[in-house]
Length: 305
Image (cartoon, rainbow, N blue to C red; front, side):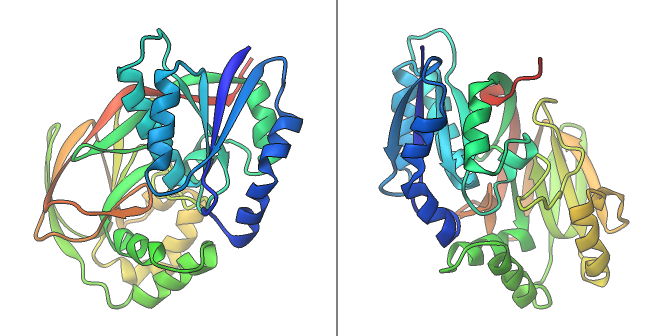
């Protein structure tokens, strides 16, 4: 028997998703293989609670901790597991599982984890842990992406919205896209010394923001590097084609995009501005040191053989 904990964020996602979470403990008990897993279920009560819970489970030597929510919840659980494993007396690192019940669910989509809760639970019954990378931006962990520019502005506005979902995300984009003023950025490190006036810069460990919006189509969570996606300050001129390419997985072929790859860089900005980590806005200094930690996290995915 293996110990597995489910950390449920009751407020992430749409109203429909929030309502579904009330029935989730019963679904878990009905669907999870009781001969393989011994489950523990906990609900979060406040921001950061998932970090604390995951940290405790990791120190207790749980085999897996499942984040039930969106990318923000996944981020919190990952932070707790990484910090908890440093103090654990047990040999193996606790694996991260995901039941994607948030808004964008970018990290889960990258890993091909089913979006339907029952299918995601069934996958846990025949899953295996793999080692993946995570990133740090001025010491703050990210699993999917972080960045600055227009996408960080949208993340800030989206976080303050009463409604969730793709339609709200799109409304925020349309509201701000024509009034946004790009900055000039300087990237240095790992052989790079680049100055670029950009509409946005995304540092991608995984391939998307969420909603299948593939900002870095070739990004891998197992290569020890990040894809740095720089969108031109003139991107508004090609906004329609960029939007199509974003969901078609070909945005890196656009002449409005430049792609760099690195393990570790420093981003120097003209002034402090919005910055996001896994879609959530965070306070950051003007200069930001970003690096990839190779094989720093174990994640449960569909068993390959």
